[in-house]
Image (tube, rainbow, N blue to C red):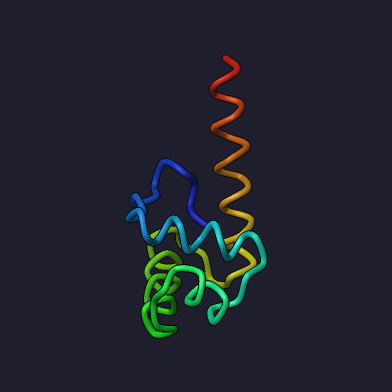
Length: 77
């Protein structure tokens, strides 16, 4: 996984999908919640994986939580 400084920003829809993946939702449930087709959700996940350097959904979830923790730590400084 790349360091946060090397990450390309995610589009808002990709970020929303990634957050839902981090909540434990599968593609079908995400598609239903966002009123999109499953193929679109899969494209967002693949795009997020490429931009973050993650190789799996599990790594993507870890990236989300690391990003959250880094943001919280910066706000405390």
